[in-house]
Image 1 (spheres, rainbow, N blue to C red):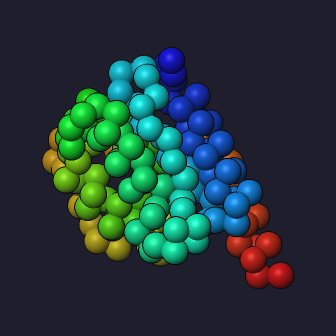
Image 2: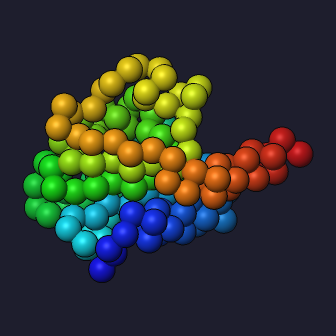
Length: 146
């Protein structure tokens, strides 16, 4: 049971750390329905050699399987980095009820690149544990540049 947004984002950060540990871009994601965690994922683009294997895409698939349907209007997605336009489009089609993200992505995030791609009923909250989320990404890319 997860009763707070902060606790949920900490779980998403655990997924981001798992990605980091496997040399994947450290983005983690969970999806809750009510107070129950129904999906968790992290980036697998390198592992699967698949540019669409973003954390959000993996979590949407797992959540849809968990609830037995393709629509997620009662669900909340917690992700450590603002979704890209591809993931925002998938979240639109899934009709996700709520998105909470940590760090903004001014270069490739959906709000700066493509405007508002989400379902009209989806609510968005940003900046939760933003420093923690951004720190892990900065550490990863600093390590990559060496």
